[in-house]
Length: 311
Figure 1 (tube, rainbow, N blue to C red):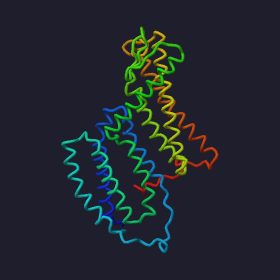
Figure 2: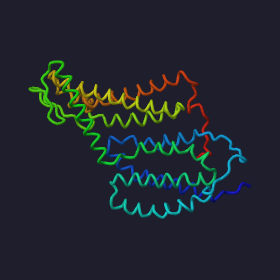
Figure 3: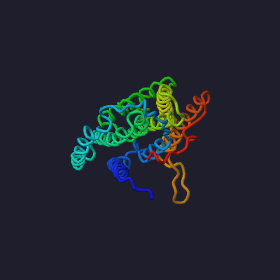
Figure 4: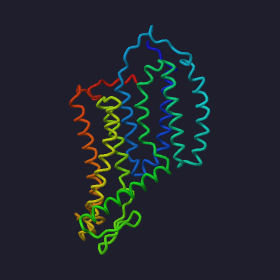
């Protein structure tokens, strides 16, 4: 009769509880912020990446445990376990403090890899680092940097659109991040049109596809940079298209429903353009990744068996 490994059961339960706490903390901003609405998909993608890890056998004669292996829980695990209740107590009074999310993730991440390190050393532990770190794409950036980046994109997009409209001999002037097109009114480059949402999506997709197609580090970095450039380009095209429609006197089509069928309203041109932009970003990054993979040995994580024992 097979005996139950209570040590493994307790460790697994504790680790699952830690990640559930982290997801609970982040779920509110995933719900209310369109910029981070992809967060609900990220834990599923992390589990997929963990399932596809194939551990290569380690020669016990060649792998000599260092001094810390087997003792990491004492030196690092216990202090972090004692720190966690304090962080959670602070979270009760400052649940929307974004820096707290990063601190909480760091604690959960370290408490997750400590049992792996104590059991198998770094040679096996390093395999789970990327799947766990991939969760970072679901954690909101610090608010100050988030706002600065959004404002920067708004200013750049507005400035470029004005320059293009002037080249096309249309009346246009820039007032902050608002484009004045004379008798046709004004065009505001809001957060959605700044491209920050598309940038977030491109980072998630580029990092995941880089792992899915088993690219090397330099190829993953190239795909990430390419994905960011693709998202910026398509967002600029979308913002210019909305502005061009405005200067042609069709501004009512941007914010109003195009038509209605009974009680159902078709999306406005602004929302429809946003969906098309998102689809084009994802499709182009996928095409870029597939094209880069075609010249290499074509084997993806989808072809690998799922190792449920990894969980």
